[in-house]
Amino acid sequence: MTYHSSLSPRADTRIGKRLVNTVLLIVAALAVTPQTMAQVDPGMLQSLHWRSIGPYRGGRTRAVAGVPSQPNVFYIAQVNGGVWKTTDYGRTWIPIFDDQPTGSVGSIAVAVSDPNIIYVGSGESTLRDSTGYGNGVYKSVDGARTWTHVGLDNTHHIGRVGHWAEQAIAANLASIHFTNVVSRAIVAPHGGRQSRFGTNPLTVGLPRRDAPPILLDFATSAVAVGKIRVAYNRKGPAPAGALIDHEGKPTTNPAVMYEEPMGALLTAAGHKGYALAMVCDLLGSALFGGATPQPSRLRIPGLYNNMLAIVFDPARFGAGEHYEKEASAFIEYVQSSKRTDPDAPIEVPGDAERRFRVQRAQSLPVDTGTLKTMDDAARAINTLRGAALPMASSMVVQ
Image (tube, rainbow, N blue to C red; front, side, top):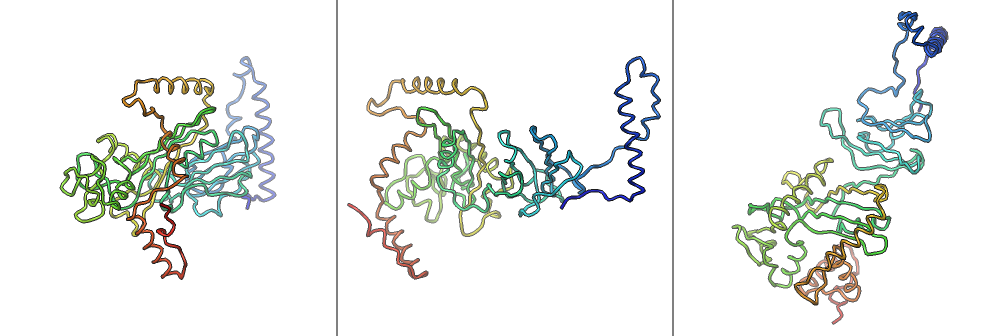
């Protein structure tokens, strides 16, 4: 629906006369020179008044975006009123976001490369009674006729965040990912002995033109909790320096993570990993409306993630050739360091994952404890759903 003002014929006549007078005044003003400026009667301008040209909806406008190649086209993002578009320089406005599940909009952007590509960021940072919740980012590729939700909505376990960075790398884009875990806390803060965090991974991906990309993807805990689960299933020790028991004493017993009284994982590198874990919870979730692992915020059962991904095109910095040469030279310099073990190479972030991927493609080692857990799960599903899942232990190759 297009909104515009409706006037009577008499009102149209009055406005028409005013418009003619206004045009004459503008023409006269353009003809004014410093010599004749003093002769202009200021009273001639008293009949000019500001008026609203829409859109006709109360509330605050949060963002405005124009299209340089289409000077008649503008978009506005309203705090709790969706997105509106004009194609006639602001004379009339059309609501273009009303069929989406949220009307709360905090930002809008039009792609420089293609004016038909539009991004809308839902939600707004100001906490007040007129603000609704957003639910991520929306994208249109047809000039706002249709929208696709490209944000994370009610996300369960994301899994390996590094895969998201690899997708960006495949498009020659760099990315930074801050992820939090909304579940039972399992990581103690630096100086504490009770859990307050999830493992909160931090991920960075950097493309390289003629060499393997740089991929950093690690938990902010001393080790990933999966490694503790493997040690527990194998009934072996956990890595030293990774765990504390319920009294805050160092331990290598993985049972403190799965049996009462419960212990906790330590953060990576002491206070440094603790600081990164805090940032992942606040920047990766709370900043845009997500939850943190406080008891009152947990959804039972289940594990949920929130993630803030910052993706950008390195070419926009205009230093592509410099980056490629500098990265190659710097990595070569780093790897020229004398090794503590002559047989062990100095790897860059991402090398270990690529090496493990090749190895795992040949075989995947699984301990007997994990096999039993998988078999029990298959039996439970077969009984509950009438399925016929095979036992994992039946597929083991010695």
